Length: 132
Image 1 (cartoon, rainbow, N blue to C red):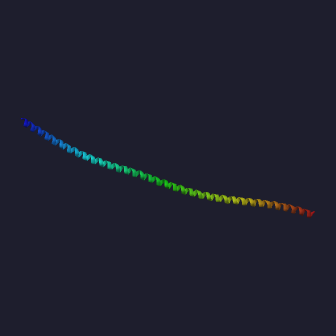
Image 2 (image 1 turned 180 degrees about the vertical axis):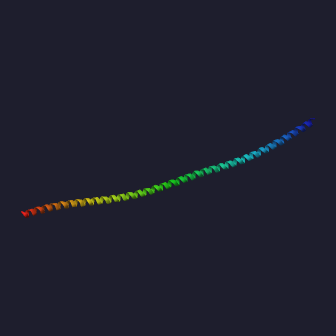
């Protein structure tokens, strides 16, 4: 009877060993799948990080181009303003010169008028003397 009990126990142990072996194989297969999924997720994470970096780089380059464009616009505005200032300075110099010339002519005409007036007074006085 002991032999039959031992054979029955051995049969149970073999069946349990087969079940445990099958469980181990299933678990190993699940672990392998999880490892592959983890690697896939890591790769996707790396790609997302790279994409995020590229997006940030693109945004920075876009902002840089906008700033360069704005800087060029400001430089053009500055050149236009400089040219306008130069033209205004030249016009101011021309107006000052014309004003000085006009004042000189006015002074000269005033002098001539006084001189003619004195001559006319002298002429009138000599005519009166001639009539007397």
